Length: 206
Image (cartoon, rainbow, N blue to C red; front, side, top):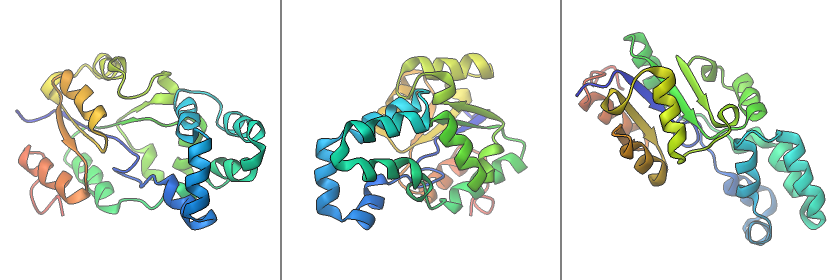
């Protein structure tokens, strides 16, 4: 069945999100391993994704862990260096779909302030037909309720939607709602999937 709208995750689908890679480059792999073993940085980021204040949440963790204070503050102060580079082919796919009047939604685990900040660097983040940003919704993937909210708000459900995400647990949750899905491992695979779904031609998906 041809989908009626396309849903994009953002991190590692439209923009690379690799905090470990950033810290390896800045403080070295050995120190990064030690810090991540001692501090639940992804748990901290989950709070931001759930709508907790960006600066306050990260700085509070930094003050609570003085041995890693400066490094933890980098998660905020140098955040855009972690959320880079853009996956250009994926952005082209988004634009190609919209050029054909195919609605494109975001569905992303992202903080309120960090998303607004990212959009100043990556203007295409302002161009979705509908935004589903976890920080505003106060829930994150793979919570089943976030998928239900997409359906309720958009008026589309099940196979009307095709969704790309880089995490298998998020894909499984979408499949439980009968969405069409694609586990993102690179933009060419996503391009091929959109062609197979009848949404783009091979030329449009280049």
